[in-house]
Structure formats: structure tokens, C-alpha cells
Image 1 (cartoon, rainbow, N blue to C red):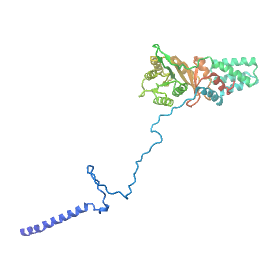
Image 2 (image 1 turned 180 degrees about the vertical axis):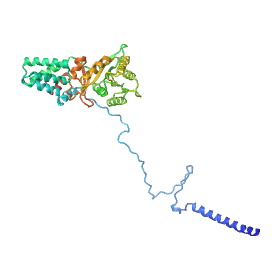
Image 3 (image 1 turned 60 degrees about the horizontal axis):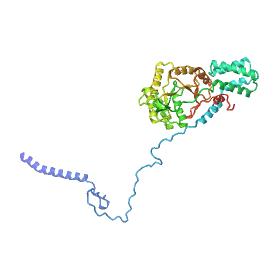
Image 4 (image 1 turned 180 degrees about the horizontal axis):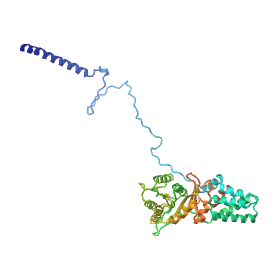
Length: 403
């Protein structure tokens, strides 16, 4: 038995070893890449430090095409400075005020002229005139004065034709709006107690929704059109969009905006920084926008007083403009009264004046508060803010550009 086992082992082990060697050789041959003929072999790339060799002859060979990289060359530089807008001259805006009011239908002037042009004015006609003026927010006091003046003049002059009625009405409306009020804007730089120049500081106040921030941007365009250098102060820190909006307005005409990097920052600090920036850069005017405030919010009104006190440490206030919506009516009077007490308002900006029957608010504001209307908003265009002119305003209300 042992001899048989030894015989099998002697025969089987060499056989298995031979088979394993054959399998390994076949496996290595299968993994080896096929050998190409010399003509089809790729040229070997010599190492970088190999010595130069004689280059093969290149005669009769066509070089492969050179592939250019995918690079797009722009026709213009990658970054171009934005082109600054040129605001419309102020003189053109004054003419547009009259034209827009005339084209709007001028409901106030049209109704007054329709009644005054009647052959014989009865008490009912005078009552209609009075009602028209009251609905236009002229106010009870000024309305009574105008009716009494018209009654007297109609009786004395014997008004019977539309042209004479219009001339009379124009004369009385001009007197009611009061052309003697100072409507100029104090935007000239001033000299401080130390003899150093200070920019004129214009603080713009008002309630939400009156177009206050837009008015500040448009006023900057008015000043730029007059050749002034301006700095904007975004002191409405409770509404991030307000600072963005103001910055956009300024960038269009090359005016810098001073703003806070965080929402809810101290408005007085931002206003102070804006005035200091205007002083250091030699600007002519600093326009400071403030957050919209309701007249019954005592805390916010106190804050407005703080802004005023802080600004005056750096430069005196030249103007405090109150922005009012011409369509708000008598409610605007209450707003104006409280703002005048807190912020020392020096003038009024009436927005949305184009095409409104509420033009009488001009008279009411001036008569009850002693505040002149200095600027009027005529529409939504960038240059639709114009200095207020009594003659143009009255002619617009009457629907005709000629006296």
C-alpha cells in the first residue's frame, strides 16, 4: 500500500507542476498587448532629459492642423464704467408743469370756469362754486375769501363772457396761492463759526407712501442739473430697500450715497456721517432721507428730533422739506402741523400733483401753516420734479397756458 501511494505521488506531482507552468505562460501571453508591425507603432517619446537626436526627415510631410483654443474676445472691454445720465434742465420742467396740468383736464379750474361763464349767477351757482373749492381741499377759510372776492368783482365788472371770467378767476387764484412767499431752496454752502465752509444740509421728512425716497433722488437730479455737487444720506435704516433705492438714484447721476451696512442702525449716526462726508469732500449739498413716520408715533417723532440735533453738530440745517401726497386732502394738514412742530419744516414738496382735483391743498398748506410749497411732483419720470411756480400752476388748473 505504501509503495503504491509513493508511486502515485512520484508520477502526479511533476505532472501537476508542468500543467501549472503551462497555465501561467498562457495567462501571461493573454495579458501582454499585441505587437504591432514597425510601420504601425507609435513613436516613442524620449524623456525630457534625453540628449537630442537627429530628427527624421520632414520633406513631403504635411503638418497636422493647429487647433486654436476656444477663446471669445469681446468687442468692448470687460468692465465699462456706467454712463451717467444728464438730468433735464430745470427750465423745461417749469413749462411741463403747466402743460401736464392742462392736459389732465384740470377738473378744479374747468368747473369754476363753467360756473363763472354763465350769463346770470344765482345763489345756487355760488353754492356750486363754494362746493367745488371745498372738494378741492382749498379749505373753508380760503374758500370763503375767494367766493367773496369773486362776488364783488363780478358785480363791479359785470362779467358776462368766458374770457373775462377766466381772467378774473386767474387773478383771484394767483392772489390766493400767494406769489409773495419765498419758494427758493437754500442749497448754497454756508460758512461755520470757525470760518470753514459747510455744505447746505437738506433734511427730507414725511409719512410712508408719499414718495419721499423717490423725491430725494429726483431732487438730487435737480441739483446736479444746476451744477451742484451732492451727497445722499440714507437715514431710513428700517427699510433696506430704501437705501438701495436711494443708492440707485444717486449712481445714475454720479452722486455718492452714505448708508449703513446693517438694518436698524442708528439713523442719526448715518445722517451725521453723511454730513461729515459732504464736508470732507467739499460737496455743495447733503440730502438726508429719513424713515416714513406717522404723526401719532411719538417715539419716532422724538427720533426725528434727535436726527436734527445730531446733524447740527456738524453743519446747520438749511432746509427741512416735508413731502406730502397731493391726494391725501386735509389729513395732510395734520401731518404737516406735527412735522412743523418737531422738525422745523421750511417748505413742502407736493407729489402726485398731475391730473388731480385736489390742487387746493397748495392753498390750504400755505394758509394754515405758513409754509410755502417749493417743489411739486408731476409724474413718475426721473425728471418729473419741478420748482413750484404760482403762475404756471394756476394756468395749469385753468386748462390753458395763456393769461
